[in-house]
Length: 403
Image 1: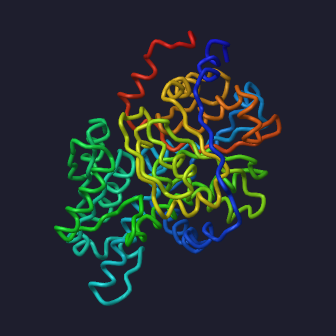
Image 2 (image 1 turned 120 degrees about the vertical axis):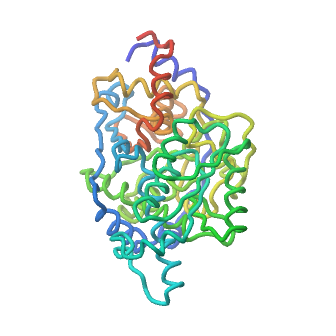
Image 3 (image 1 turned 60 degrees about the vertical axis):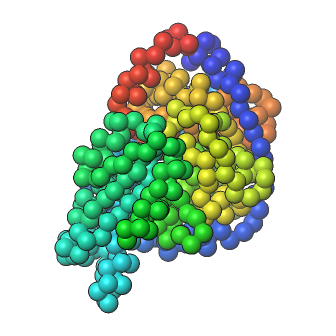
């Protein structure tokens, strides 16, 4: 990488607060091994299932001075472009399974729902959620597969391209004027008023089963990554958001590797840092979002209570990053600046990678995070190009790195 390019990361303002990781049972009890096993068994049986690639970024690792970087690229997942395909669709089936079992008075299996045996009954059950784009696309896809109506709430800053992708999957998309948290509130209130069922990736008091299923679905991704690595990573950088992705991966890594599980580092936009603030206060903390980040999937002000239970025990570090290093990281992967395989990634996918590059430009931050030339880093590339217009704009930007 050229000096001008690296200077973008060296100048970035990265905020760091240490977590308080401690031995606990959240990684086994909030999300059990049985939760993950059931999700893996179901999802890997779906038509079109294939493990997504674990891309070795050896050139970049050499450039920034770490031993290894493995990037789990979720762009190809079920043709939906993101890891969310694993969560929303699976949680939708679990909601339908519980509701149909209650209505019909006998156990209904996921395979019966998948095979269309209850398509008429599914057509009478409306599933709803709020989304920044990817979770809603997964839910719409899952509903379309089994014939259930789907209603998705999006906030003002969700791109029209992402809205159209959900409509193309049969969803009724409702745009509001507020932010993501306002769309969550509206989804909850309208569902309660109409007898619909919320399939959310965030939990709140009295609402936990669908978010648990969403996080269990994400475990497919983590298990694929673990099975593909010869040695456990020493570090994993995980995007924040409401915390569901990070908590799922952290729990699955703890269950898989035990005491050899990697150091968990949470990365958030400085404009939406609810987990960072939670780490500072020691309890799940909501923040107001005054300005939207380019990382649309991470623009969340209220953490999931369930996810925080896991992260409070498992996460060693919390970082915030500025938007200024996001587009350069997208271009780094897409233009193969370090000679590594081409990866076309969305804005939210590269948060962990951007933070890693920036951290290695600071000896003090590298020391604080325990990063050195022997570090083996796992990154979750959570989305591919889920909005072609935004990706095209990033690639066309006048680049400060002059390459």
